[in-house]
Image 1 (cartoon, rainbow, N blue to C red):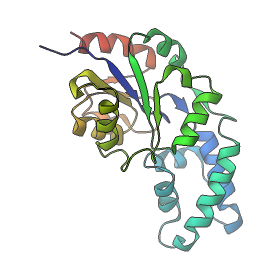
Image 2 (image 1 turned 180 degrees about the vertical axis):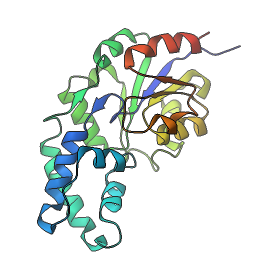
Image 3 (image 1 turned 90 degrees about the vertical axis):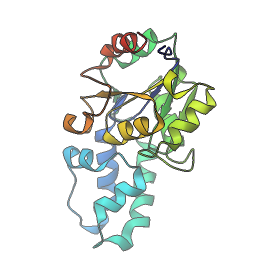
Image 4 (image 1 turned 135 degrees about the vertical axis):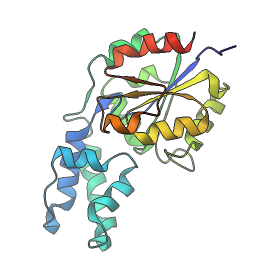
Length: 217
């Protein structure tokens, strides 16, 4: 018998919100004194997904490795003050979250927990979620299944009773490895070709309730 879905775990950036401009602005502020080339939003999107430390590593490469700590510090300084200057929920996200009131909901982001919580508070979305975790909430981050496994343990439900919704291959890999069903959104930061292993791919958030109905059989 198929177990009913009780818990929906959402990714944050690229899934619930489009934060690409604010992240790009913070990165450009961080590297500006060092004469590095300014980033476009497209370039930023290609780098994000594995947390800010890894983002800075990828951006600087080995050539500028000695700048990592100071660039990270400058990034966090700017980003924490400009979290939601241009960041907005994707179309239909608040309305869909309201429709999903019968489910328990949580967030697992690879953004740091304090920033994830503040961002959702600023956009008046935090009230939909019982738990909001970031990259520093548990010992590992996506694509590791550890945060997903810890989250379903927190909610006292089995993997077959949870679904993970995300925009990247890291989300899908984490969900699959944890044994939960996965729904990928095609509008986020990753090419849809990387999302083919998901149980469902949706083109907008308002499609989610009907996919959950299918999973609930």
